[in-house]
Amino acid sequence: MNLKSSINNFVEKNNFFPGQSLNYDQYLFMHSGLASTLNSFHRGLQDLISISAWTTSIEGIQHIAYLPMNVKQIHCAKIQFSNGMQTTAHSHNYVELIFVIEGTLSMQISGKSITFHSNEICLINTETVHSEYLYTQNTVILCLGIDDLFFDQYSISSPSEDYTFYLKKLINQKRTEYLYMLFSPIKQKITRTASTFELIMQELMDELPGKKRLLIGYVERIIDLLTKEYQIHIAQIDKKELHAAIVKSICEYIQNTLPTVSVNDISEKFNYNPDYLNRLFKKEMKMNLSNYIQESRVHRAYDLLISTDLSVEAISHQAGYHNIGFFYQKFKQIYGATPHNIRKNSLG
Image (cartoon, helix red, strand yellow):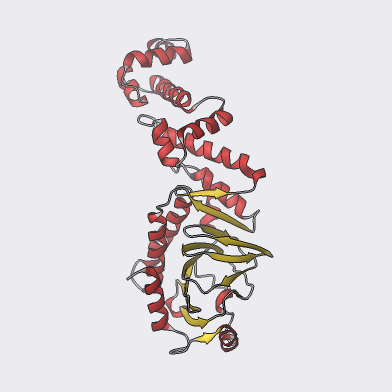
């Protein structure tokens, strides 16, 4: 069963108005006695994660399911709409990641009209007023609502071995400055992102053991994939900050994979052309990637020389050199002395 059929069948089975297909005005009227309309749910504080999954058809039918962590609050409806209808303007008390699975999505965000295309993701910050335009076309949309804390952790934690930490930190910073952020796929296939969104939706549809821990892990994976499968679109004035974050992330990745890392490996990991990465890196660091890798390896070897009893040959291997002669050449070029002399001097 494809995703659209899965959403539609779930809505038909759990329709808040069983057997009925209401027009939008009727839906709002019949739903007015509840805390808020479906399109503007402000969920409870205990819900860290939710998804609004919805589809539209060429017949002008919208199937929509609101899926919070508490299954008792699941809400589904089948709504008739006229082509080009604008939904009620609303905001949320959580960050929303809107993933366009199929078709296009036109929105108005704080008075600005914008259209998102298949496989793009839009991040809308908390309390940002927005609305959607519904068209008689086939669309599948997943709106992942997540608590601020998922992003806030990147403003206080340290990089550790997460080489995309600085990009995540930039996203967290810019989401508070912008009303929304656009992420477009770097490559056509983004299967990991799509499958993770679907896994979150399925977990929220079911009531199974370990649900909360799994959901938290999936959301952190989504944020990670935003830095690996997607390009971040930010204002021209902020491009320098983006480039600095990319270079910091590259440096972190190099330090974590120093013995085996290569320029091509970095290019594949960050989904950028090697020549572009070299230009970007040189602009920030005043040296190209190859030179930075060589200097980092020599510095690593120096640290091992003065802090361990390992042989020079073993140290050269740990630093990423398999040609001992080339290692000696690079080491002397940077430190002006041989590894043996450095070790001898460090011992007094």
